[in-house]
Image (cartoon, rainbow, N blue to C red):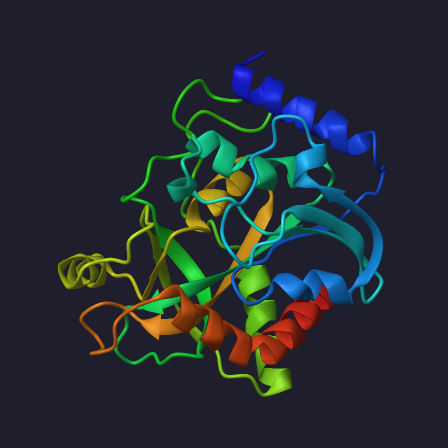
Length: 273
């Protein structure tokens, strides 16, 4: 057994000592959505610190716990506060929570994040359904010995974001009257915001939004057969597309401003998929 898989099994054992809850859907909450987990029908919570060897988030505004419960009668597990590569963890630790939720029973993963707009047609406050991603700027979570227990050595990545789930997201957004952009998400390492030159590079690559999370989690989850979908909240325009200086306060303020709509959309998606 590899050390990565052994650690994953240890985390699974720690959680199962607290709860035997079986989720169908997993959610990872980005900036501005953290309190969504407080509003569901909660059955059990597990603090990250209760899980032996589990990485903990150090980002302000990110709580550190799993919330197990129901969204409109659908059993879910919610990661309330994610771990980022820029916090100093190895990439295998960054994606450990996504893999763990899969081992807990989740067959589908809904990813959310706050992102910078690279597409000039976007504006702060827009929602973007992720149709594809670019991970060239980060280490792959699949580097190293393959975890045969989870998936194949050379997984196909031609459809990381499940088409059926994406179709449902579009339908639910339309029902709610919520505008929805679509595009490609590029993950870079952070923690510094990108330079204007880096943003021009991302745009040349075909990116519509850029951020410091999500794509690595999507890759790891897809590797183990989980159906993945994702939505970015465009909280600011990326460097070079606006004269405004970038800071985390602006990101948080924009995410908070549209949080009510975002939560409505997430609940509708959970019920529909």
